Amino acid sequence: MISKTAWANHLPDKIWIFCFIALLCFLCGCFPGVREEITKYNSLKKLEQREYPLFTDQFNFQDLIFSIDKSLEYFKKVPLERKYQYGKEVFNAAHLITSLEIFKTFLQQDPSTEDLNQFIKSKFIVYKAAGNEEEQVLFTGYFEPTYEGSLIKSDVYKYPVYSIPDDLLEIDLSAFSDQYKGKKRLVARVNDANKTIVPYYTREQINMIEDFDTRSEPVAWLKSRVDRFFLEIQGSGRVVFDNREEIRLHYAKSNGNAYQSIGRYLINKDEILKENMSMQAIREWLECNPDRMDEVLHHNGSFVFFQEESGGPYGCLGVEVTALRSIATDTGLFPKGALCFMLSKLPDPSNVNFLSDINSVKDWKKASFFVLNQDTGGAIKGPARADLFCGNGEYAQFTAGHMNQYGRLFFLVLNPEF
Image 1 (cartoon, rainbow, N blue to C red):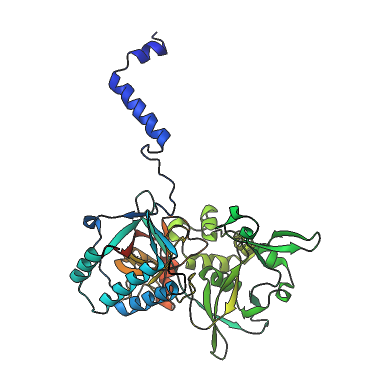
Image 2: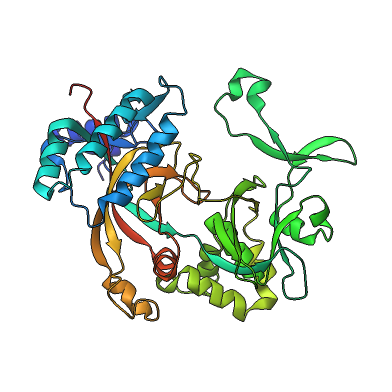
């Protein structure tokens, strides 16, 4: 029997070299299959012009121009020297204003696809979002729902939509130490028993406090607890009263708890098949299983508080989001307000059965269009996630409820050499 040492001595030199290189790659973090951590410094890859996608936009440029104006509104409110990271490069707000204004002026000429692509190649730098290992981004959707409600509690309208509670605190730790600069603020409350600062109440605790409406005045009352939950998920919505008047409610704050997907929970519990998962499927399951509603809803400890505002809905930039022109991403990785281009799929609005036929999801058409990065969300984390604002109405509800499409996302900025 040959000893291990003797066997090793018989290895060809090439095999030793291969083993050495493999070990070196592993130690350096470049071993095949090992992906480097995605940060704001490598979340975008600068493309050569030959790598640019074909820029085609299937929608009306007027909506895009409106959305560009909203990003301009945001950039003109921040310091002009504020920095925005595009992969390894940095651009300030002043440059991004110029970038959007030049792009907007060109759009007003209603250019052809050929002219549009030539314009971008001659004047713009294009970056591709890192996405997942296949450089793809999972696109989901959100919309502005409409629910029946009242300003007064009754036997019909008994589920409160809460405003910001009086006892909710936001703690900026950077005021205590520089080491916390750039960190997320803590959401907390004072424990009256021992005067200590503790995390704010979870969803389950809020639902268990019978007089919670005394510390958090309701802005409206809804018919359905499920409606209230989905209003929180969407972050904004309309409440229609019996007299047909309506108010618009927008996200004000949350209780600071991490968002947990009840859709994922129901899949893991084998209650809904992954391929059948949608907002509509979740609603149907909840309404058919009222005895398990607490179990499922309380899985998501996050709770959203609202305020009444005219206009909107508003994204994280404080400006209105535009149907099929605004996306939400992880703003810790991608630049706020940025001009983007997405390749994905959307349902065909000419298919009259798209609202009733779940199989129509399989027939979604390829879609390509420009969007602006104007929002974020608790479930939108990492380089491979983006949420498309779909607007309101039946088409928006269906699209947002069923959208679970992989695609590609690109970011555009004016070449500073132009």
